Length: 94
Image: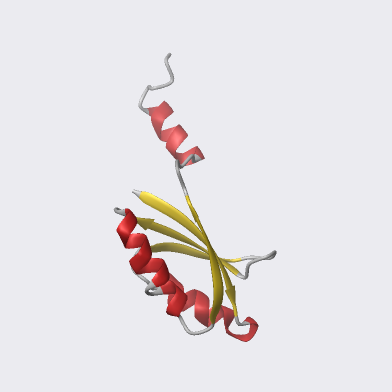
């Protein structure tokens, strides 16, 4: 699974509509409305790198109200949930 984090700048008066339109795109798992340098952050999860272009460049960037994006591709994913699952399977060495 390939994960990407996309920081999105949107037209201020359209942020809720832009967020909803992005959330409905295939490959987008979550969209967060945030404070800071970006208006929205979208989590993208796809099976192949080529699909990132389809989701981000071909669809997300073309959502009406999107002004610009900044994409970060994850090398590795760490999560508390994943660690808890591993320990519950007895992988803690004990």
